[in-house]
Image (cartoon, rainbow, N blue to C red):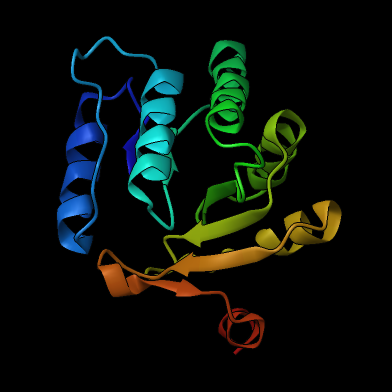
Length: 170
């Protein structure tokens, strides 16, 4: 795992907890002033050097309306490709199931900037049903790959379209 969310103080701590829970290695910014592209580059190089199957790069919760943060995503993608030609293999955007209609605009903006390959729809463990994601998938042609239905490791599950529809329209 690469802790590329260098803005929020608690983000690194949260990812360190998830790395421990899942038995994963983690690359963090040691000097607390590192930029996300630097952390991600280090992680991908380490993964390549040590023969990891997957390097999961967290780039933080970003506002699609913040130009500087979106440009940094472009830099993140470039340094990953430079460290490992052909990478990144997946670019997943996490969508909050409680977001509502803003979800489509958010997904469009991120897709235009970095080319999203799939979505993770989260917060489906409460009253949110995430129905707006239907218009996002329809409009952009990008699939939902996983859903988050809780806070545990086992709560990130492969997306099942039939079960999702049944949950929206019981």
